[in-house]
Amino acid sequence: MRLLHVLARLPAPPNDGGAVYVYNMLKGLHDLGHDLRIVSLVSNKHEQDAAMTAALGELYAEDGGYKPYSIYSVLKSTITRQPITVQHRMKPSIAERLLDQVPDLPDVILFEGLQTAAFHDVVRKRFPDVPIVLRQVNVEYMLLKNNGLLSKNPVKKWFYLDQAKLMKRFELQKMKEADYVTAISENDILKYKEDLPDVRYFLNTAGATVPEKSTESRDSNMMLAVSNWRWKPNIDGLIWFFDEIWPLIVKAHSEIQFHIAGEGLSKSFKEKYDSENVHFLGFVDDISTLRSTASIFVAPLLSGSGMKLKILESLAAGLPTVTTRFGAEGINIEDQVHYLHADSADDFGKAVNQLVRDKNLREKLSARGQELIKNSYSWTQKARELSTFLASIVDKSSNR
Image (spheres, one colour):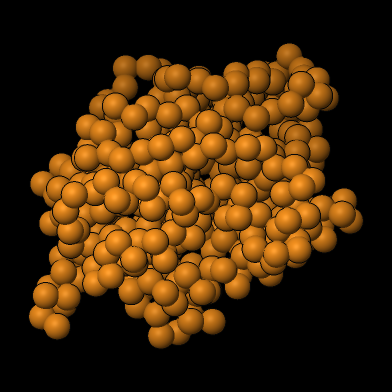
């Protein structure tokens, strides 16, 4: 099939959750023999590798001219009643120029992420009869709503809740405009169906890759967290962990060492929580080595939507994992079988302490987690599922 993917940014290098999901799906479709056309803005907020992306298909890309949010952009969004993430960064004029360069007619068009659905009208103008699939990775308005409910600052609370209303209206409109919608979790589909029961949905979860057998030996006192700490649910969860859970763990196990990888932690944050047991690593090129040497992975999340790739990747690495219902959401995992579930600070601390003490439990969780990824969540499997779904769309379209 000839597939046209519309992206808000290049997905390479795949060094954060969104990029990992898009890149691996594109690579999977490419490896299955599909002919890819990729129309993308280029972000100055992320590391971008055009050559790595172009290796997957014909690339048509242009600098998106992303600028930081300002008081002006906030006021403009509030007055025009358009979500700030869409209005401020999604530029249909750029998308139109890029689409005009695509030389042939695709069989299917895929919007990778809700924000790119802002280009629906210019895509329809260029390709009026080609089926459009909107590929959702979250219930976007719920993320904003949860951020607002958790915020203690009254101005931020109002802004997030107002943006949630704007995003919900935009999200529902764009799902209705698309011919099909793919969702990353069953929970997301159930949420969508509350408002749009008649939209045609397809479940296409994320995946992971089980690494080759590691020769590294795990450090029983090494605990790991990996995230993009600029993402509000991640930093909110880490603050909760440090304030309410970390003291319980250190009290029980004074030798434990907490390694925190990922960008976005401020100097003041690191100074506040600095200790001889805490190691702020920043961006790490080789995250696989950390995953193969740590003995415990923690994902303390108090909100969220969609599916957490960091959980899939920790399971794939055989790294015993503790997380909340938000971390486990959308993944077919069982407490005490594949991971340890903990929603309260007390339960989270007890779960970590249990893993520190019990090597046998760590080994069981490690083996079962990797088995789950191999059997149900490999990227090859997920790309094949999407390919089969897209082929059915092409068949229906050709038989009209």
